Length: 235
Ligand SMILES: [Zn+2]
Image (cartoon, rainbow, N blue to C red):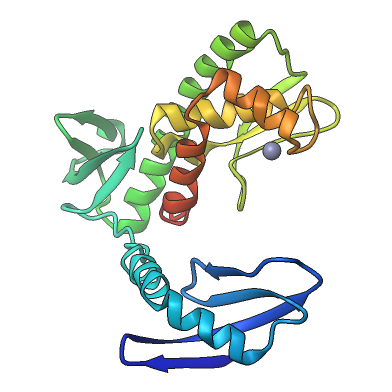
C-alpha cells in the first residue's frame, strides 16, 4: 500500500502492474484506490498521474463515503425500499397473531404485529416482501418470456447471497427475491439479462446487444444495482 499526499488530497493506493497498454485508476466500493499499470510504468510516472487526477479520485472517494449503508432497524420511523420507493415504517402493536398484517399506503408501510421486537418485525416484513417479490417477478417473467420468445425450463425466486439472478446450463433461471426493493425497470432488466443467457451463455458483445434490444437503458439499470445493491442485502 502506498500513500499519496498533497495539499489537495490524501489517500492510500495499491499498484498492480501487468502487460497492459494503458493505465486505469479504480476507486472501489470499500474506498480503496487501485492503480492498474503497464509493467514499464515507474513510480514517478504514477505519482505524476495521481497529481493530475487528485480531484477526480477524491470526488469519487467522497461519493463512496456518502454511500455507506444505512442500517435497517425495523422500528417506527425507519425507511425501507419497495419497488424503488422509500417507505416509512410504522410498527403498530396488536393483541393477537391473527391480527398481524402488513400494508402499504401513502408512502408508509404499516406493520401490525403482536410483538414489536425488531427481530420479529423483520421476520414478518421479510415474509411479506418475499411473497410480493414472487408475485411481481412471476408476472414480469410471464410478460418477457412471451415478448422475447425465450422460454426457460423453470424460474425460481429464492435467496441468493451475492447475485441478483443466474441462469444454469439446464435453462433454469434463479432470481433473488430482494429484487422487490428495486424499481420495476431494474427488476425487468435482471429478468431480461437472464432470459438473454438462454441465447448466449456469456457476457459477450452479442449478449449485451441482445439485452439492449429489450432494455435500451440497461446500463442505467445495471448501475442502479451496483450503487444500491449493498443496501438491498440487509433484509
Ligand atoms: Zn449474466
